[in-house]
Length: 99
Image 1 (cartoon, rainbow, N blue to C red):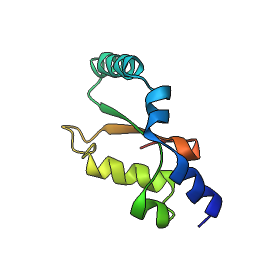
Image 2: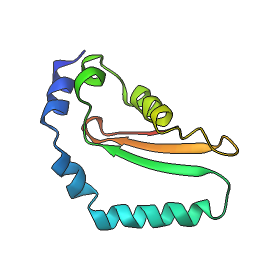
Image 3: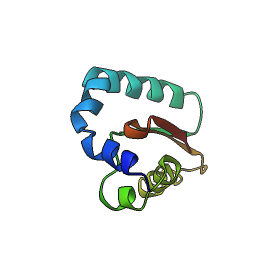
């Protein structure tokens, strides 16, 4: 477990997520996803977390592991054709995962 990584996650604030992804940007992403979903049977979810906190952070959970947890918690896999996709951003680690 890296002290530097813990520090980055502890100082990351929700306001940064809102600054990078203001409501109008999130609305545009949502519209784009809906338009795309109209052309295929899959479900796409877009999730942004500024930082890990608590247990995931101190377990040194990677962005990939966290994305898999979010995928499961949101039941993205539970679609008619089992073809859900998660696009997960973890800003503190500057990481993007697609599950």
